[in-house]
Amino acid sequence: MVWNVCLHCNMTCPHCYAAAATRPSPKDLSHDDALRVLEEMAACGVRVVIFSGGEPLLRPDLFELLARATQLGIAPQLSSNGSLIDANAAERLASVGVRYVGVSIDGVRAFNDSYRGLDGGYESAVSGLRAARAAGLRTGLRMTLTRGNADQVDAVRTLAEELGVSRFYVSHLVYSGRGFRLREEDLSRAEVRTLLLEIFEAADALLDRDAGLRIVTGSNDSDGVLLLGWIRERYGETAAVPVEALLRERGGNSAGEKILNIDHQGRVHPDQFWRSAVLGDLRSQSFASVLDHPLREQLRHRVERLEGRCGACSWVELCRGSHRERSLAVHGGTWGPDPACVMEDSEIGWRPETAAREAQAGY
Image 1 (cartoon, one colour):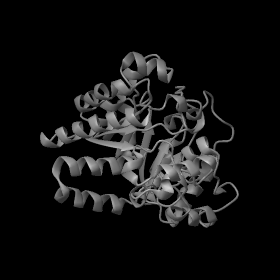
Image 2: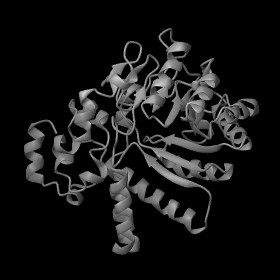
Image 3: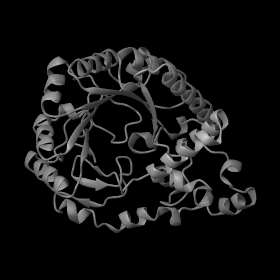
Image 4: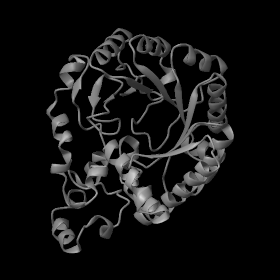
C-alpha cells in the first residue's frame, strides 16, 4: 500500500503525481479514521505500507501511525523529500519500526533546488539521508527522469554511492497530477533506451566490484524486457534464462492487484498515479469492501484486454502493459498501449500494417 497521509508539502515539484499543495488540506483523514484504516488493512493481509504525501513528516500524528502499523504487523516505510529528517526524526523513525526511508533528489544541487522549488533542498535531502543512515535505517535515493535531468543520472548515482545508500531508484515520468502537464518533457524512446543501457552498464559494474548500491528502475515495466535482451546479448542465452524466469515471477505491472493506493482523503486507487480510478472511499466503506471492486478483477485479466502495441506484444506477460494512466493521458482509454514503452516494434512483433489499422482507432 502506498498511502498519501497528507496532501501538503514544502516543495513544489512539477512532476508531483499528487499535485501537492503548500498548506494542509481540511480533507485529510482524521487521526481516528487513519487508525481504523490501519486495522482494516492489517485484517485484510496488507504487509507493507509506504507512508507518502505531500511530505508525510508534515502530518502531526505520523509517528503514532507508524508505531501502530508496526504493532499490527505491517512494515512501515517512508517516502520523503528528506528535508525534515534530522538526527532526532531519524531516531524516532527507527524507534517506531521504520526500516527503510526513500528520499527524492532530482539532479545536481542547482537543478534540484530550482526544479523542486526549495532553496537548500538538495543539502537538506543529503543531510536527511545521512541522518537516516546514522540511525540504522536502510535508505534509497530516488530521481524522476525528464529531458531536463537525464544528463544528471550518473551524478546522482555517484552521490548515492558516496552516501552509502542501499538503492538508487530511477523512475520514469508518469503523466499524473502535475506530471500530466510535463508529459512533453518525457524522453523519446531512443533517448530513454540509450540512458537505460548506460544504467544497465553501471549496475553491472557495481556488481563486479561488489558495491553495496543497487540500481532499480521504476514506473515502466518494459524496462525488464529491454534488460532481458541486454543480458542475452552480453552474457548469452544461459544467463538470460533465469533472468526471464525472475521477470515472469515478478509478473509485470500489478496496479490494483499487489499494490493499491490510499489518497489523503481516504479514496482507494489501483496505484498512486492512477487517480481517475476510484475503487472506494474509506470514510464510508470498509477496506474489505473496496477490495471487491470489479476493476480489480479486470486488472487480474488485463492481458486479455490490452489493445494496440501492448495487446500484440510478444513479451506482454513480462510487462502486462505497464502503466494504464499513461494510456489514459495520451489515448483516453484504459486498455490502450503505454506510449512510454521502450521496446521497438520489431522487438515485440508489432507489424506496420497492423499499426496503420490501429492508428485509425487512436492508438
